[in-house]
Image 1 (spheres, protein in one colour):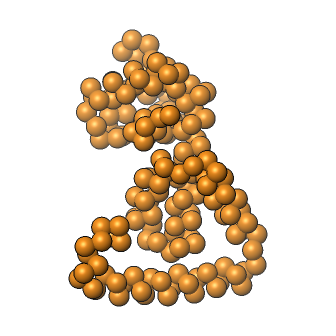
Image 2: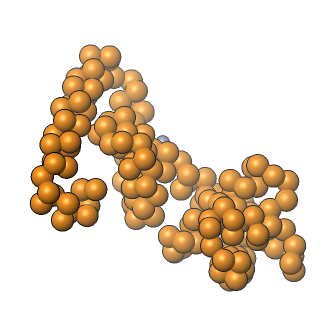
Length: 159
Ligand SMILES: [Zn+2]
């Protein structure tokens, strides 16, 4: 099992390696806004477990094993954002933040169902998606109402 933070490292290395030829620990530190020693430690752990490769002080490379995990996480992240924004009507900024947390805790069974549900939804008739828009508009109105109730601020999870 990889920790959420280890999963984030793999995702960051995958994304960086698609943007540049050589990925260094400094690039990873910058991308994740963490200190260099923290990255060095994380890379060492991931290297020992076969998710990353790194010659001494050299560039960081993602292995096939690491790539498989990182792309699955990225896919799930995309599915979660899609679900939260397009189905539930959650604001994108909030959805991105939530997805970043949810992707680390969802089981593969739920991740698969979510993926299949989104495909199923795409295949639905327009009338169904329009009804969904009705729900989103109504729930956005209720959310605004909710925010006006000062008591609701006590619930961090509603923010
Ligand atoms: Zn999917």
